[in-house]
Image: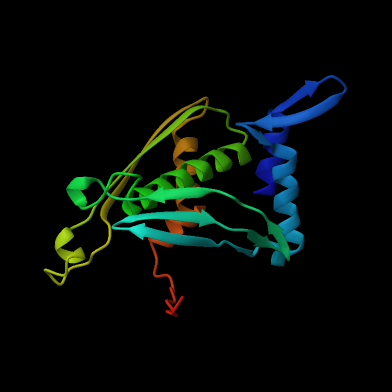
Length: 200
């Protein structure tokens, strides 16, 4: 990827006064190259821990608070709150998106962001990028009425891309996004999840 990024650096170079800045698709390509090379040289820096705390306040209502991200012993402070709820038709108060919507939003965001990153690494300028995500669940599983999975099924992603690139290049980038997106990887393979309970 670093070689492709150097290609992007050459194609995306602009001049700002006496200082050269290399930006493509909203990225500082030099910074991207340095990040990749840094992980290549010190693989341990590629291990990142993400955390969040969930505070429930009744029904399906809750707030998810992002916490610090840990990388190579450094704490990257995060202070965002994500509201969650259901619409009244699904037993909620409609104060925020459902967990299902949050999951498909995360999948779409990660796949779009990874697509843009891989396009940038290949020196491809994107003029527009849009992604629709859809998925199904069966409430018979959630309510325990049938012995069927309670999770998502029939997940579908539709890309719409405008770029000065061949169809083959755009397909190659999409395949790279599928291979490298952390959220796509998470939802398409078994992941070990440990659950613990204590009195608070």
